[in-house]
Image (cartoon, rainbow, N blue to C red; front, side):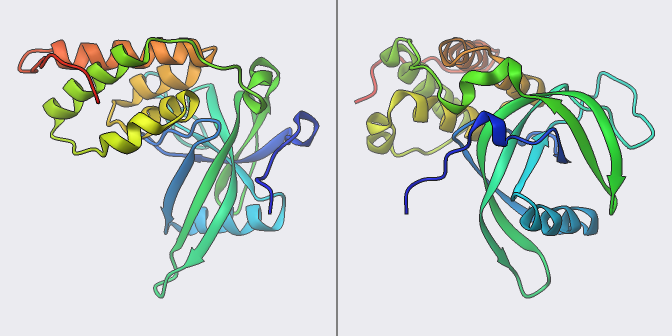
Length: 220
C-alpha cells in the first residue's frame, strides 16, 4: 500500500484539538499517544469516524485561560491516525502522522468534552511537500552528541547517521526533551532550513549552560 498523502483541499476548516504540553508533532513525524481521559477517548472515536484527523497543540502558559480551558499557542500541527489499538483497561494506543501545521483563528463549540479549532493552513502550504533543508549536518551532529552526553541519552549513531536530512530534523525535534517554548519555536520555524538553525541553537545553548560538557569531535 502506498504511503498516505494529503492535499491542501482535503484539510479541514474545523477539527478536534488535543492540548498537551511538551508533545510536539511535526509534519512527517509520528507521535505515539496513550489516551485515557474520557474526553480524549471521545475525541479519538469521533476522529476515527470522520477523516481520522485531529490537531496537536500546546497550552500557552503566558496567556490567561478562557471559558473552554487553558489558552493555546496559536500554531499546532494536524495529525492523521495511522495506527490504533485498545488496551484491556479501555485506553487507546494511537500513532499520529503529522500532516501540516495550522494557525488557530477561532474556537468552535466543544463536542463531547473536547475542544475544536477553526484554523488556517495557508501560512504553511509547503508542509505537504517541504523543500529540502540546507544546514551543516556535521556541525548539527557534533552538537547533538554533546547534548546527548550531557542529558545521559543513549542513541544509535549508526541509525542517526543514515537518516535523510528532513527525517533527521523532524525526529530530533520531536524526541529531544526540550521545554515547551523551545518545542514551539521548532514548530513555528518558517522553513526546514530555519528549523535546522533553531534546533542547532537549542542544542548548543543547552550544552553551554552551566554544568554542561562540550566534548569535541565528530559523529561517525
